[in-house]
Image 1 (cartoon, helix red, strand yellow):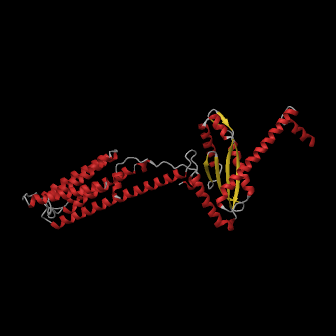
Image 2 (tube, one colour):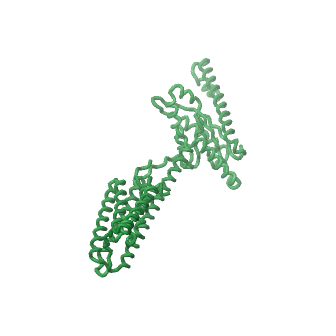
Image 3 (cartoon, helix red, strand yellow):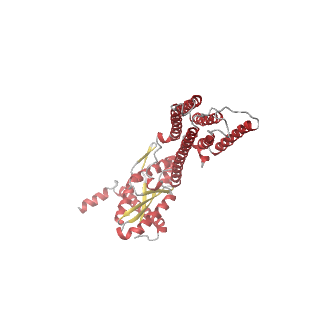
Length: 416
């Protein structure tokens, strides 16, 4: 898991459809985009505050608690570290994240190394327990490999100090206060505890951010898998899933509320002519415009999907009877047939809508789409026959009377 922090702290901005297909996902707010920077900035501020509190406590100790030379040396050292951490916070605030984390990590390394060196070195230094801090910081800010390298480096430095003092007899300076050795150990342990807790805070915040990004990415991929790439509405994959779920709901509740599912299969008449005459770009724009009309002409719980080409389907739940579904189908035909300006032309698209009810008309859910498709073709044949009859009637009126519709008007007057 720690390997993922190398992708967390670089600070580069990272670039479901159920019931939500009609709404595009809103872009993340600016605060969320900069959350990487916020975590790093808060971390540095926490380190700086910890070091400052330690410095204030350290310099207020009296002579009976700590020797003045030790107080001066270590007070200056902690003050310099506070300055470095403050500079790192300013760099993070200005967007220089790599420089900020670099300064933070190496300031902690050199500060702890200097504290061990100035208190006699390993293995007798009172500050030796602090050697766990540099590897933890590098683990959290750079990843597992950097943390392992930091741990090996720290062990190598400690080993070199022990060899220098034990084998070669090189004595390291020891400015540890002799006034109260117990207080020295207590301060080191408290500081060690505070820094470990801070590292755990970094770990948890980074984990939370990674989990949030992972969930967002999963939802985005789920949207892409269930979304028609051209129109943005549901595709066939999501349609079949939603249809099965809707049928299961009806099977559970039909005895109580007698509500059914209406499945409408929509096919356009003459769409191939538009593609051939005006080009596929115009045809695609027409499909997108009609998909938008269908989305905003249905209820929020209805599912509008494109199966491919010019074939659309609508799943409408809580339908009472056949007249209600027929009225809905007629309304959709009127919505689709409204003129559509595409490019420099205005197009009028006719459609045929076939519909079936589940479970009163079709009991086998696996045949719902097939029956709706068949109903659509029957509707298309009836519409074609009616249009052919109307064309023959107009042709007869033009041939016999010379004015289309005049013969029908005279017949009506005669009946009146």
